[in-house]
Length: 334
Image (cartoon, rainbow, N blue to C red; front, side, top):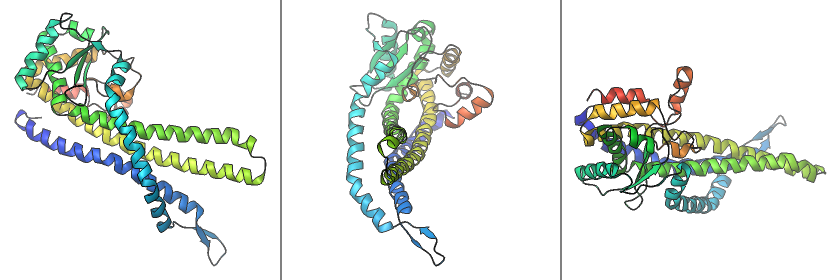
């Protein structure tokens, strides 16, 4: 990635990110329509000349029910999104066990953050720390009141000033480019789809386990089987939606990590220092106990990004971060 193309690439990535972000509600609504179409296909049809039953989709019926359910789907997703959007700060802090870092506790970090913020003309974010002797860092937040840079104690203690400036510059670039806002938004949409899919699977399991005991007659068994079929169709649709939302989220993340590296190198004025920091972090990676994949994708180096061989190739197809070795190679070319 050439230095002279950073601003152009940022503009292109921002435009592509908006397009990708708009795909989330389209995917959700598209899966609702497909679900209704599959129900119509299973429940409608006619007997042909040979006496065989032929299934067909009643498009007028599907569109009618889609328009009827549209306000409920949009309203429910919208409400869920608003609640999660404004609760993300406490959720992320709880997930990693972070706490506010006081200036008197580590004035060195505060001075580095302040100097870098003055260099790029941005307001200083909050600073959090995680008591972890290994190394990692991330940025989070959706606006100036919630923007936060979080570092581990290991990162603060074991990197020199130039390396620490490179890492913090990387995280500040995520904030400057609104990466954190975008990623949190994508996290919320993926969470919505995965939760609905999980609930559908649980409902189908309950019907299969308990339905046979409550439905002793033929009509009851038929009703139970019909409900299982509906829930099964719902799970398939939501699984497809979940797959596509993951792909769009990962596409956003990978591109923006490269831009954050370039921005961090520009801010600290020493690309090799950031490359050295990434090498140290990947050799002793912190925050590996984080149980939430959606939070882990915010880290400067993902905890699961250190596999090798075939596992490395497979993970690279769905990884939220590009390979650390590739990032280091690009930084060393500056």
